Length: 215
Length: 393
Ligand SMILES: NC(=O)c1ccc[n+]([C@@H]2O[C@H](COP(=O)([O-])OP(=O)(O)OC[C@H]3O[C@@H](n4cnc5c(N)ncnc54)[C@H](O)[C@@H]3O)[C@@H](O)[C@H]2O)c1
Ligand SMILES: [Zn+2]
Ligand SMILES: [Zn+2]
Image (cartoon, rainbow over all chains, first blue to last red):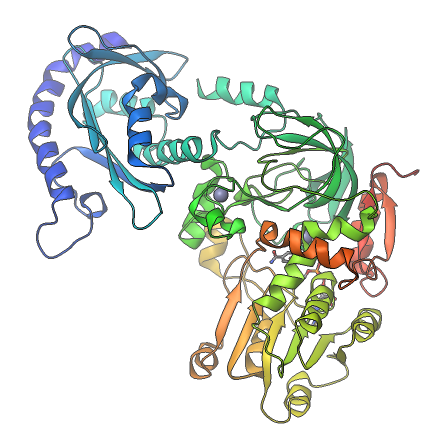
């Protein structure tokens, strides 16, 4: 499976180059309100650029700093991101390997670096050369009105190549990425606000069975 | 353990299922001593609520003894607690506003999508109900896993019998909030549709809140008699034209406030047509809202409409014009149980509220299916059923 992705990487690389420009434009348009319509870019009927974009916001009753700190420690992400199996500590070049769950119990690697960050404000990351798929993400933390805590927005883009490879990647994201992003953010909110992630299982066996099914 | 499980419309059974375990650190396990069957359970029994699966353990009104605690539970083994039917984290935006039944964090994320597409935002979790509300195993069982046990359960004093405090789990706060949502003023005449447990507690609450007159509407003589004993005037809708009677009884003004304690399975009228769109999407039929429509016609201009009765989907022929032209205030919602338990426990202790008058039957858990059947088919005599897992069969 890993082999297959490598074969397509020439095409994907080109797509990534054009995609990167579009993503940059997307990020800036998203946070700077331009034009007459103040709706966020990911709610646009026609999203800018060619990348598949997914985004979501939640309000979490915790201060920005606490949320930023938890997210910035990437080893915490697998605790609420369902399809991320593990994240290694960054190497000397600041690149860490994210292991993503793939069908049939396999995993694929995404080599990730921090593209930009500002303490307590935002973190952006992107895949670098040698990754099995091309993806970028950004999380932003903004004060919510009054004592409502922090508004957290997550944007993830990935480059869906056409054909069999594209379908494999779609599968890789397990579900519709939009749904995945929303679920991941809600799990993050639960973890931060309640210290745990809600589940209605009655026994630990059920939890294990569910994990196996997803894995 | 033994538990009452759902298998389909009109089909509930007591089965042996796996015992619950502590999953999260704020959980506790409760050994159930008393649990009740609710009108909301009848909506499941009748198959009008979507998202119920065969094998689901029902029951959302329960109390018992703490037998196990997670590391972050504040409960102690051996304590007697009543558990709210709403599962609430206590720390989110809605919980902080005491809107506990809208808790952001109790419904597992993967279960939130369906209700979010129905209502715009996802529902919060309830015990023993639909998978739309989490699919948590319920209280008509020997044991229950109770999440967020540091927030929900209320410890009750040993000198108060189960029967006196059990209804803090749902119907007492629901009747109370039903009356509170009617914003009752001292001179008000309040009409209550439905003299089931919720209606009866709404009537009692409205009287305690100082309504000048409460009028109860139903068609079961025995249920109407219970309402009368509480101090209400009664109308049997099979004998009397309700709207005409209410106009007369309110001196030609219309009643000041109306409370719908009937919900989506209103009696005495043909089943409304199914709305195709909703049916296709979620397998949900159109709600039968005839009692509520009647209430909206009966309430005066500028009046107040409170809806504790449960609705799930959509309805047609809605009196939208009456709602707007009359300038009505309308409130509903699943009860914010945790907001009321402490105050209501005090009112039980000091005798302001009587909570046992409506119990007609006490059965062992094993006889729960019989309880369901009769609570549905013999409503006149079977006014409230309490199940006792420890009782001799
Ligand atoms: N909001 C909440 O949190 C909450 C909590 C508990 C119950 N409920 C809901 O409250 C409702 C009542 O519950 P219950 O346990 O009292 O149920 P119930 O079935 O015992 O009582 C309903 C009563 O309404 C009467 N009725 C039916 N059609 C009528 C009509 N057209 N006019 C007047 N009366 C009519 C019935 O004869 C019956 O006595 C249900 O819909 C239930 O789901 C809501
Ligand atoms: Zn109930
Ligand atoms: Zn909450």
